[in-house]
Amino acid sequence: MTIYEADWVCPASSGPCANGAVAVENGRIAAVGTDLQLPGPRIRFSGCAIIPGFVNAHAHLELTILRGFLEDIDFIKWIRTVTASKKERLTREDLLLSARLGIAESLAAGVTCVGEVMDAGVSWQAMRELGLQGVAYQELFGPADIHVEESLKGLAGKIEALRTQETETQRLGVSPHAPFTVAPRLFRAVKDYAKKERLPVTVHIAESAEEDLYVRLGAGPFADRNRERNFEVEVAGCSPVQHLENCGMLDADTLLIHVIRIEDKDLQVLRRTGAAVVHCPKSNAKLGHGVARVVEMCDAGVRLSLGTDSVASNNVVDMFEEMREAIFMQRAHTGKHNALGAHGAFRIATLGGAECLGLEKRLGSLEAGKRADFVVVDLNDPAIQPVYDPVQAMVYSACRKNVRATYLGGEEIRIDAGPWMKQAGEIARKLVAAP
Ligand SMILES: [Zn+2]
Image (tube, rainbow, N blue to C red; front, side, top):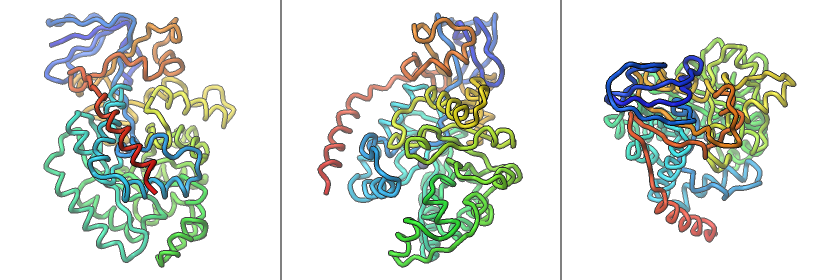
């Protein structure tokens, strides 16, 4: 057993404790508290806080290579460039390198668990190689009824090929992309498949004005694009969230991504169905999509988590920044000085994320029996000192650079991303040179 001591231990499942310790044995947390009288070597992190690894509940690690490639362009062009890059310009090897780089960035920033939406499917390999925990959701598309069978067959094949590699905390899921790329019949079929296979589901919903137009009126650029390709556009005539409910998509095993454009009635739908939400404040703001009604979702009892989305729309994996932005935007939006709060944001960035991914029994907080996935945050920084409340200090003042060490299953993880960065530079040059 090894005992890790710090000025503060912030378990997320309970309040911070001063001069605390975390005892680790065989990759799991054996005990948490002050004055632990246990045998074994002691490692002291002076002036630091030990926290659970962050749970980034929405990412696209395969797109790390597109950081900086899509700046200041409209959403339609943004999506088209992402799609063209993935399908026509980047090889599987490129995307694997991209995912590895994203994982190196995430671990260095204290993220130990993700809700990863993968298209090529190579993030799963990178997660297994580097030990990042979480759910890898296989994405699928199929905007018209003619795509349903083929799309579903493709999905089942990909999932089957990987299922034997699952562990308790590296899980697979499925992700039908969004209403303008997934026909209603495909939504229903995927959810049926997911229920049968006991797979969690995640879906982008209520993100943009263009998507809202598509669902409510069958109009706008996404509808035009689908009609150009001779795909029938079904008019749902309701909000995107209600559209998903009508497609049988909403229950406690579905995690909704973004959820910005919602009506009052949608809050009731979320509450009634138990669907969870991953809030991506920086991505939502950067792409000009708006501010989600997070305070109202909290008040309605909706399960919430925090996600960065891909670095193509973020651009940095920094959960401190994400927590801060979530709070600041809610306050700017509602005029309430106490909207969300530091402790609330810290909880959704850790245990709340684990709950939304269905992994809360095994990770997300510092509690005996859980995986020893924890992070040492160095508070010895003039920008953070003095510290009155460590959670408030981290949420309002810290950044990814204050992460001193990241532990996965009780082992400190250090990755030399130098060679990958060099390769990423070469791939970026190829992308820029492409017609
Ligand atoms: Zn996304």
